[in-house]
Length: 402
Image (cartoon, rainbow, N blue to C red; front, side, top):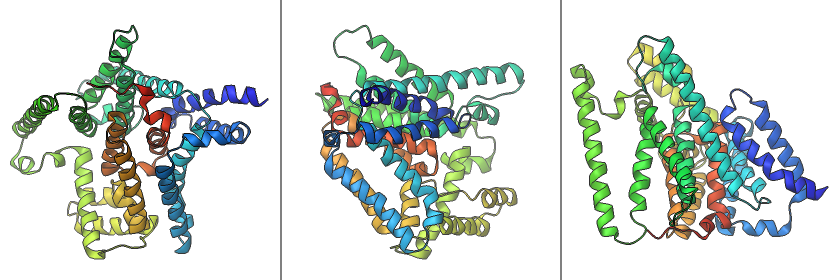
């Protein structure tokens, strides 16, 4: 019986990854699969499986999770705070449920295929909209945004994960599979530009720059890529200014002229105001009180009546996971989380792939509350697998030299 369970367990895990993007359509299925994994786990886990975990980073992340629960319990906020704490625990649980699995290739393929499924679903929907609508603008049209399977920020997240996985699978010598990995990279990059995910484009640029720090002739490679990226950025900025239709729009910053960045810049102004008003936050406000403070700020400082009503009604969160942890649970919580990231970085700074995944996680945490959405917790869980599982950090003994 144990042999049978051990043989089907990895495939259940893979199926879970494949169904994550379709969470809005079949929400019950990922929960059922997760339940099956949890029930099966005790029957197949062995003591030696735990040796896969990198001890210090794992203990730090576990300490972070435990502190969140203790903090919420002490200050009688557990019921309210558990809304987001359970998402953090879900990411850790994802890592623990992975350790009985010996082959990482299945999980990597699940990420790649789920990315391709998202792209196919979204592109088909976009073509349907194009054929049924007379006036449509790709990228910024609300119709196009709604046609995407999941939010653009998470589409960008999984597309970048798929790009990194495919890049890692490329071999230096000729191999027939290389063309497939290259095709997957191209498809994901094109889709990122199609949906105009500025956050994903910026992260891709950061990864490209970071890659130049690994391998020989860094002094030539890094400046060339830096000049190209600066040139592209200048071109984007100048074209945006030229296309501005009014003096009022021209005066706004580049970031404030898009829907997502306008929301974030408005939210971050309130975050800054709360931070200045409250000073040093030791114990945190809790999940609900953080939202209450932000909502009160929106109501107080936003002049436009329509925008104010939208912000107050939506009760937008901090859109920064680091700030969210600090506001919700205080200084010790954010210190543990940052320490965890620093330890993982310094342990693996000589390897590109772990460093790249850290850059992706930190970048998305700076612009999104990844632990507020179940899909975010799942993908953070995958990144944690790369960070915490020793066999993953070894990069299958194929660290690229150039």
